[in-house]
Length: 188
Image 1: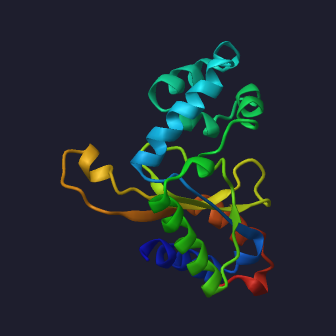
Image 2 (image 1 turned 120 degrees about the vertical axis):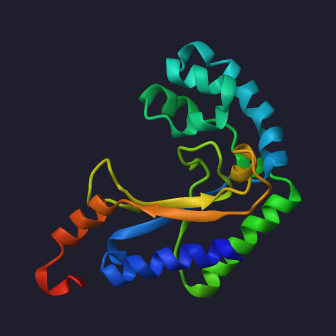
């Protein structure tokens, strides 16, 4: 499965850079469109009680893509979302099997991970797998590499259905991590 290969590539690059010991892999599934649509109703029912307590940005997100409220940096929003129902509890069989295969592949490769059921990434086009390599050495800007699957992106842009998965790395953040390593341990 491409998801496993792409995550493994990222893990190997971080290892080659000498920063793997300082990062952890967090991942989640956003399911397929059918799972997200079913979950949307459950989440909106939950959020209806808190609509007036949400930040203005999250009230806007509630109308467009309520799943993105999980990504809010507002403390009040975070408190509300900490008790929200989870998407993983509303996945259809196809989405559950897909994610289980990703986890099994990572296990087979010996790649450690933490499932973070509230990880959604900041973009609306992700589907199924979303992941981040996070460090505690950089403070609040802890994500050094992140990505996921985006099967519906080409269609959203007017193209034909094309599966896709990828990631991007924060070059500045990686550079800062490399700058904190003892000189003898820098691979570059």
